[in-house]
Image 1 (spheres, one colour):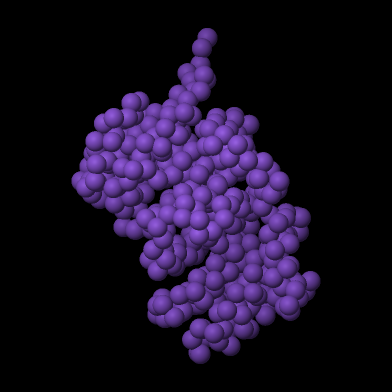
Image 2: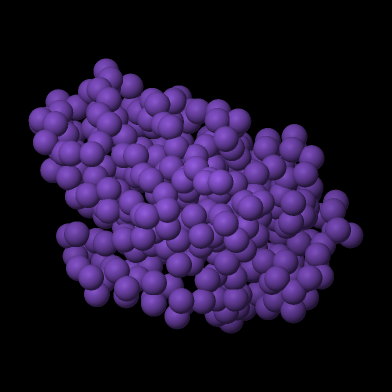
Length: 375
């Protein structure tokens, strides 16, 4: 009796990225294996360049054209058209390293409880403005880390189709962070995320990237923090690793964002400071539920340390009527972690804790070097 081979749908939204599209498609088509199939869906979101002509010359893809509606709508069109058992969203200017799909499938086979697998990401700075680097990936407890910020670019994730459809479509009202919102809704719904350090994708950093619009990005980051707070309020079992850690990570994320946008948009920054204070109050009320398990204890220490460090920046922009409240709340949280010193050694403490939480750097570099040797 034969079993049906799994199919993976790689969905590539494209808007005026004709010059990038062929390499993205090639990197997706080369994923095909002997025991699984790959369909590549290109969704042209009303491009005004020669994307349609370029796509017409690419064999082995499904091409869909729509009027310009934005990135989320293009991904939604691809999701609705996909036939695969798994979905992977690849932006037209990014790449999949060889065999990344097969590493995801192997991870899913080892962990049938997973709904989402997250792999490593190599950032390539095409203008040479920064050295190429591997995006640090947390080794576990993704649910807690996502309470602080997004953990990885969209194409590092591969999701079971049934899980994606149960969660719903990408939010078309968002012009940034739409992927973070989607993964958060997966977590709020109870789906399990796992880490696949054997796989790799390529994030091509260039001036045309959507994330190069820094102000817009921070404003949407702020919106995500409020959605995280709502999820912590309403999803009884989120995060599974523990509410105390979730609220603490969330408070730290709010404080960091508030400090950055304090001079850009003071009213929004004020709302974030208030959300930070609310989150700290929630966390402090759950002090008795703090985890003593080694991995979770390190995560709690990490975010408590990061909170202290970010307070230093935040005090320069926090509204005067909230200043003492912020100092008091952070001090109360610090009192739960007497081993953390608020002195010149704090940044070293944060870096040491972070190294304990991410995938082994030697493993990340080994995975990246396998790709670089093939270039």
